[in-house]
Image 1 (cartoon, rainbow, N blue to C red):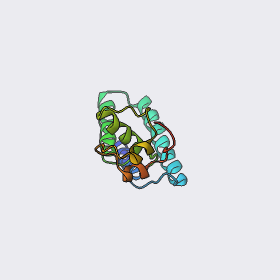
Image 2 (tube, rainbow, N blue to C red; image 1 turned 90 degrees about the horizontal axis):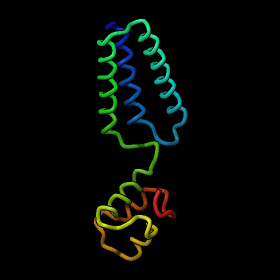
Image 3 (cartoon, rainbow, N blue to C red; image 1 turned 180 degrees about the vertical axis):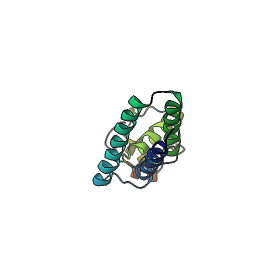
Image 4 (tube, rainbow, N blue to C red; image 1 turned 135 degrees about the vertical axis):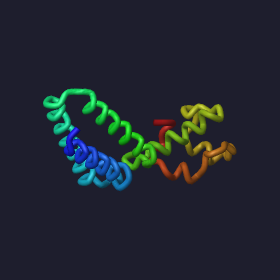
Length: 133
């Protein structure tokens, strides 16, 4: 394993952190820049793989891929606010309600008393006029 693998790994960790923790949905320039860096690093890895076959190389990048995914476990999904609707639907399903039965407004207007179905969660997502996404 060469020092360039460690540099590539460090850059991948840095760009993953930046994309996962510092970017908002409307930061198009940052998003396209970070994904371009990812793609460029991917091409470098592919080129290096042709010249350096073998298990240490493979195990290093598999381990790095797992590390990058673990890093993103702690990131809030900033590129879509559908996550709030998934939470809403999940809370309905856990309590035995079908998300397709009523529009979300119904549960707030009729004070159903469901745990976790709150006005704050309702305000957080955009798909208020749909039964579910």
